[in-house]
Image (cartoon, rainbow, N blue to C red; front, side, top):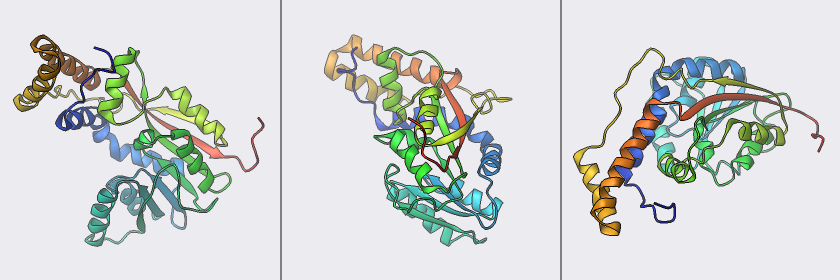
Length: 267
């Protein structure tokens, strides 16, 4: 089945795949954010930016645990509204603010933050290199920029890669591509931590499976377009992709830190 003729997955299937992949690191999120706090040198009196903050919980964690002033930005206004409402109800006040904005066009002056973190959703923007450059632009000289990245670990053919990107909603890239973006943005002393196995270490999770309703939706869409044989193959293909993404090292997770160099980089 060519990428041109591939049927769009149903929303429930999209959510299941996203949960299967991103959920692998949910158990280690506390450890991850302790490490991010250290890499960002977050502390009272420092201003930190979280790009792609989503529901804002990670931005809140950084503010509450480090005392830093944290600004969270995300293009999803609905999620940020929920985050703001939750903050207003919080028993312990923390210094956090949220702003709706494109991640590749930040509404801040140059060199205003003491550190910045880019969440995995950075890979969903049209031009991720520009989003990385924006993070470098808004931090002060010698300030750290830390990216949390889903990366390709296994070889996929073109069709399977397109299917993974479609289901995750993220334009996955190889680690070397992200490092090049950081260098082009003027970041130096790039350090990489591989967190790929930390999300599954010590845990054996069952592979998520499609419900009967989800299977029927997959079959129905494929059958209307190509017939019964293609419909059966569509379910098998979706199931195999979900299993592969859930249990194997098909998708990696890396934390990459760079430091803003204060002078123009040599061509």
